[in-house]
Image 1 (cartoon, one colour):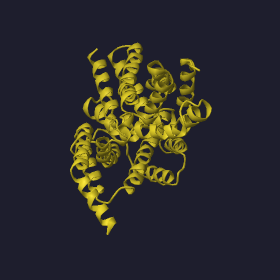
Image 2: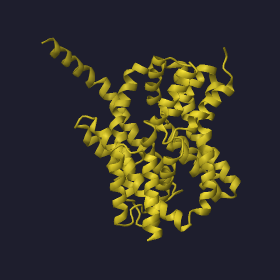
Image 3: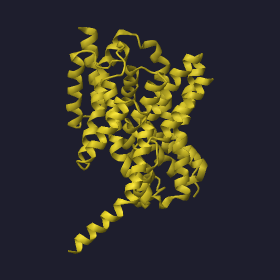
Image 4: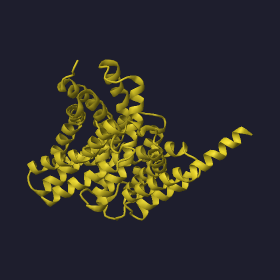
Length: 191
Length: 189
């Protein structure tokens, strides 16, 4: 039960501080899920980001559902897993839901508010830094354990470079992920 | 005419179903559905709404859904829109999670993920560079400091965000008005 409560609090925090949405939330998720609670390894976190790229919905929701299930199932049965996924998904949406309703109801003028503008201006560069931090932690994890590593050999860097050039040239990210999965099967299974 | 909650739910379910990657990818779809098809909000109102959705924490697509739902049918409308928007991704990820625990140690699946992990990192770094290029050069130090604090020192991103918001507000209240005045004086000359 404690685990489910921690899960709720963690995803509530992720939802509440998820300024910028999308990739900007990666670092928050990573910090709660990988660094602080160690619910996922660094490699498992990369896996859920990959899955999120090829399935509909924002990464925050996708990771909430996935992590909620993984944490729940460790606490007991498959049903705890389903309960965990509902709790985490609900928690990550709750701040969006309440804050956005408050804004719609009372603060439509917030649009040109100087304080909001100042806060957003301050956070903008930091959010970019946080996306970079998420990427850095995926490349250079704090731990040396083999199941924490996303870059395991020279092929990893070749794939990294290829996908980087591809995304720079605006190739569809879903296609890039599918191609790198195929490349992974060729490199690590067939040969 | 009062829209039924079911119509709101179905509209956002469709949006949630077909927005791969989330975030900004969802915006054109939401736009088509709520402006062109349903006429729930106007073009200009939608742009204002996007600005607001970005100032509120959480995925932009969810914030937009909640707002439109609220505008059409109040609290229940907001809840229906949110439920519709997240249900497709929730169901798909839950199904994947149910089976993934069994197939994870399959050698083919394992090899595929070994290939996808570095790819994911490359996809994350792309936006960092394009976003950073849009900023003033002095912001490079802020970006680097934030990255090092979170990755190198292991600080919680929450503290870094709160500090940045506070610094931004302080700037806006103290220095920005003076600088603004200076600039307008310069314009007069």
